[in-house]
Length: 167
Image (tube, rainbow, N blue to C red):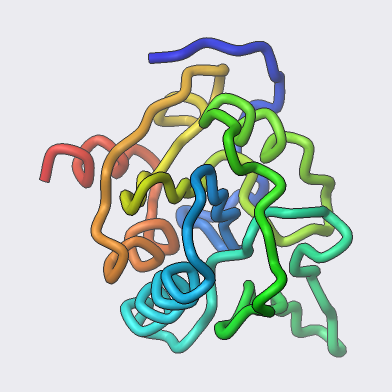
């Protein structure tokens, strides 16, 4: 388990589940076709036809929270296909650097600051910053199949991480 100093304790919203998109950090030299495949496969496995992954790049392009009357909804994450010229700013970076970036998300941006995913050399890894109450700076990871990755993240209730991890 890796320690790093970023203090943003507790969940973003006081709901028993996660209700926003998740950053997907591409850490290796992955082809655009493979990234599109991951985005689409994660979408197809979400069960709600939603693009939950946002390709981490720049907070200017992160999904936002929108309000229409009394209804609040979240913009979709990154939809495939992505432009052929897209390149990851996180290529060659570490999971710890991705975590530090994730914790910089401001309120109003619909990206979870405690849970994210990394794509590295063909493997998808889910990551959590903090303990079961999302407090602290511990970084925990678990490998995950792409087709259930966004379903697992979007259905996370507090203290379910360990159950998923050892399932």
